Image 1 (cartoon, rainbow, N blue to C red):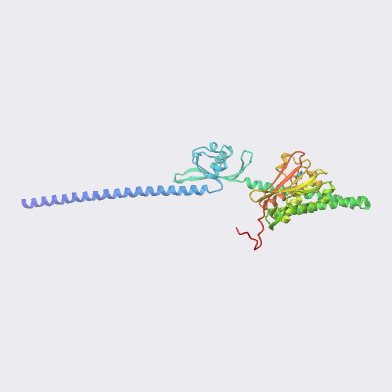
Image 2 (cartoon, helix red, strand yellow):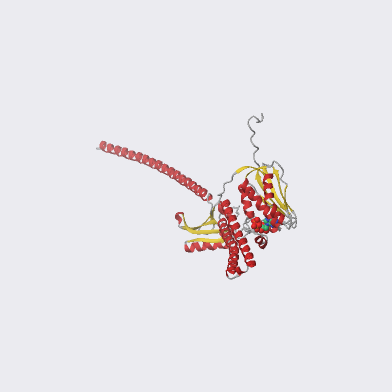
Length: 408
Ligand code: ADP
């Protein structure tokens, strides 16, 4: 009996010890599993954080590559992010994160727009002119955005710079208005004289001739205007291919002097060719002729009666040549110097029209010279006449015939 009891006690002790040992193992295993789970969770957290940072960096790079300015505001309407274009647009060099809209751009309109976007959900196509001399024009779009999973509402504002587009639009409108005006004036003169002839003036031969001469003059003006407009539009659209060749500048100036000899003599003027020998440009001879004709025509029209018009040229460094046409006379007022190359700009509108000017001559000159890679400029002093300069590329020296090639 005691033996059985002792055996039972020993067995129970063995079972208990085994159970204790197993629990210890299980606890150890559990601890190991927990530690490894903790490690995995931490690795996962790190990888999520890394992915988030990479994602953010990618998003920022994308936003910074945009031409539009982007401003992201948090739920308190403070700057959370501003891209590079936004900074350029508003000339911002310091950190703007955390600032209010007003502190950032100093424009109450933008703040108002953000408030409206919060109420309406979005505001599209709001146009704004920035204060300052360059009168920049912006289009703004704003929309409320949900901030991650927190449900907080931020606002994204996109700034699109419309300045260049607006300027182009205005230039086009101004051009159409100018062309209409230029066409209407000679047309109404022609119509008026034709109606007077129909009404009976044709019966008086002296009046008839005078009226017909006026009609012919205005018809010519219309023709010149349309020719100049066509030339300008071809030049602007790149529709004229330049036939570049070696052009001797002295010979070119001599041709212009000859063509204008009669017209110059009518005003007791003459053209002096002061271009040195052996200056050759790489240019389209017909287009260069057109430049010189337009400049010489102006020099005779606006120069002082009884004086000389001179055409000169010289070599410049960097394989360039400079040519000029100078006339004596009242010259061009300082404030007009920067504008005379604009289409339809005239210092004295009445005088230009009276002389058959279209107001496009210098715009054509500028386009032709620029299409050769050159530049135009004008110098003038009150009563000191005017000099129009332009540059052209120098022609390469002619290839020496075989046998005459230099040994070096
Ligand atoms: P226009 O057909 O009126 O001559 P241009 O484009 O050739 O048009 O010239 C623009 C304006 O520049 C002229 O109307 C004139 O006021 C001024 N201008 C051009 N050349 C001269 C010059 N040599 N001397 C004085 N004014 C000039």
